[in-house]
Length: 362
Image (cartoon, rainbow, N blue to C red; front, side, top):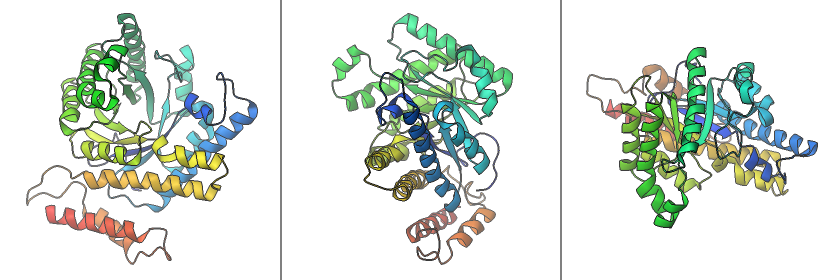
C-alpha cells in the first residue's frame, strides 16, 4: 500500500482487523476463572499470530483503491503480533482497558503509560460500557478515568480511540424486549447523550469506535453529536460486535457514505468461526488463514463499494481517484487470473468497475 501518514479520513479510511479480546478469547481455549495455564497461554498467542498471518495475506495481495489496513491487538496475548504488525506496515492500535471489567480501569494500573510507550502504537484504544442511565457514581468514575487518558494523550501527543458500547439497562431491556428494537429506537439517542456528556467533561478521542446503526437517521444523529463536540475534531469507525456477515455488511453500508465515518474495526466476525473450526480439528492452518483473509477482504470491499464519496462537479477530481492510483489499480488487475496471480478475477473485475464508476462521476 501507499505510505500514508496522519489520521484516517473519508478519502483514506482505516480498516482494522481487531483481535484485542482477552477474556472472551480465553473461553475458546477452556480458560477458567481467568487463570490460563502455560499451555493455554501459548495456544492463545499462537492463535493470534495465525489471525495476523491471515491479515498479512490481505496487506500483501490486495491493492486498495484507498485506505490503510490496521491491527488492533493486546499486549498480553499479542506482543509478537504487535511488533510484527508495525514492521509489516499495518496501522497498530493497542488497548489499555482491563478486559472483562464492567467499569473502565487501566489494565496495568498507574503504569499504563509505560506499557503504551514500550510499544509506541499509532493509536491507543479503550473500551467503555456507558449508558446515561447507569448509576451516577459509575458514570462519574468512568468519566474521570477517561479524562485521565485524554490528558495523557494530549500531553504525550498520542492518538486514541474510544470504543463506546451502550448496553441497555435492565429497565431499558424490559421496555424494548427485543434487542433489535433497542438498537434501532433507543441506542442512537442514548449514544448521543453519552457523547455530549463525555465531551463536556473534556473527553475528546480522535476516533469514536461505535456500534453499527440500523438506519442512516440513527447514524447521522450520532455524527451530529460528534461534530458539535468541537475541537479537536473526531471521526467515527464501525465495530463488528461479533455479528453475522450480513449484519456487518448492513452497518458498513449505512456508515460508509456518511461524512465523518472513516472505516471499521471488525474482529470476531472475521475469525471466530474459522478459529473454532481450527481448534476442533475441522480445518488446517492453511485453510483457516485463507477463510479469515477472505472475510477481511470482503468487509473492506463492502465498505469501499458503499463509500460513494462526496459529490463532485465537472471541474473536480474524485478524491479517491487520482491518476497515480488509477494506474496502480489497472496495472495490478491487468489480465488477472486466479491461476496466474494472487489477485482473484472477481476482485479484479470489481476494482475495475469501481474505477470506471469513479471516472464517470469525476
